[in-house]
Image (cartoon, rainbow, N blue to C red):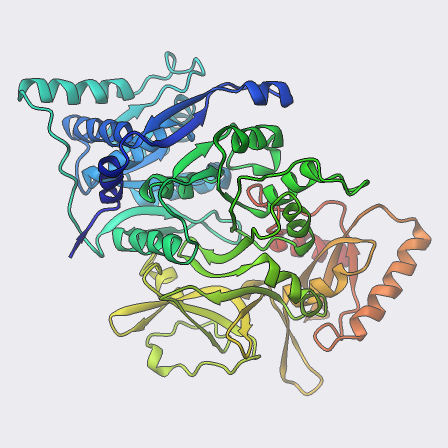
Length: 575
């Protein structure tokens, strides 16, 4: 069996050649006036298919060929879409990284991936030269001018335009203009390397096959009901690539996808109105940002109605129920926010519609975790006992019963089989199950009696302490923190472990809605201690520290860097 995600683009180019495939905002500006006047560059399905064919020919002609690995650091643009599909068509393996992971992590990613080609905007090439990214392996360079003015200063290798010219020269010499014959890859052959963000550890390269991409496309069709002819407000580059493969137009507004919290809501609202978007794929940071812009929290008045939207998909981190409820007021009553659970290694895994999520508030507020719904079609979710050791074979595992908290393990066609050149990480995270592989998500949770999955936090964020009977006892981040978050003065909290007298002790860092006076601090401490004693899973927590501003990841503005808080808290204890 052979596969290539580009077959879907080929088919769309035949079925709906003149329909819009991609629209990218090109007019930059601030304020509602400029947002409404913003202009877009557009491509139809036939144009996107044709241009990516040209670029695939061009890549071959400059020596970037099937099986080679190519870093792609191009901002969301028509060139980004065209190049990505060209790489897939040519059988070249794109390496996709999150620029927000930091210079040190980026360099490590390139050392591990050993790319032969680097395709990027001038700023990316400048950084490549300054920090020595891939200097031991990169032999082919392509520059995509982004209009910044740096292109003339940092011109490297071939230009995007030269790739197209190479294709045209080739076709003219052969007196033909044949469509590119896309690479036929084995279903399990490496198609791309997607690096994790590194927000909860060192970034790792996840090996994607075209069969994984196919499984994700089928999930979006079957479980999310996406149909050809729809238009998606694209705020996340990787998901935006699925649009054209689904026959859905990707509408890309002016925003920094690596820092969605800084997005101008006016541009996003204007894009939805201009193109009558039916779908939105957004993360919790944008749900909060757009909700605050569209609903006046003081008067409770809805300022913006998103009447064309039929579906909202939220992913990346758990969004708060309060922010989803506020955002939902801009939607028609029957429209759901579909909260999805997964990771770069396996996405999507489960989902829960917002109307059902709202019914779980009491359980969540009492420390029952966050409900992330039921498994999508073809996915199997199991909970196993927490274990720090590798597990070689699934037959040796006995899954836990409903209600028991343990490690979340998943199996399905969109689950990755390995990390790239990270043998230990692969051994630690993967469990052999016949011809398939199960993935240990690194998250803790439980299944309820109806099969719904409840998240209880990262495995690495639990705090194990010795109980009075010399048996280990674990505190879990989400259940514990949600208890303290119900206090009106608390903006958010974070469970960490500190060493006191040679023993691990649970401590909760608190970020407040406003700074308290000294007397308020004493009162707050007593109230938090009282809250802790009322629940079995927080009983024994007696230490709290107020932190002025939690460190969080820039993409989601929701993943708290508990490791940094733990170091900070330990220093406070010693002082």
